[in-house]
Image 1 (spheres, one colour):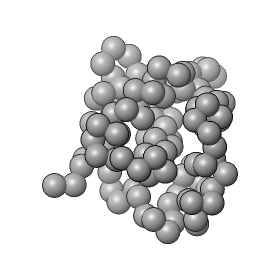
Image 2: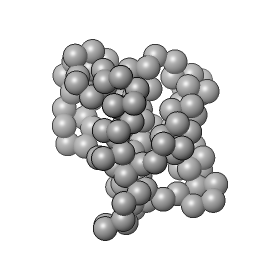
Image 3: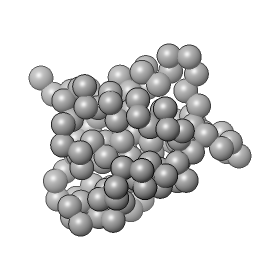
Image 4: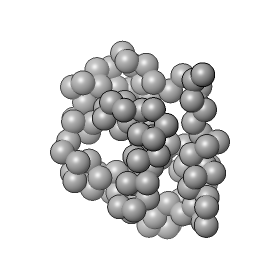
Length: 109
């Protein structure tokens, strides 16, 4: 991903977050953050947990940073057409979630 994380400012779904430490969405308790993501992006709990775990396994340990990456990935998925216009959920297909995560995120070496 091209410099998606900037500690001072990041753009997610046309909203600018100037201080992510104070952002209301990033600081929600886990269940409320999931519910917010589900309502905004149509992601189910299994997909949400898989994405979060994948970023953690790829070195994004800080929860706020992981949430920023998760939101950026969900925006990317919607832009790439993973969510049908009138569909309720983002759909990746068999093995598609991992492929999309790998396309989206290239860890620094």
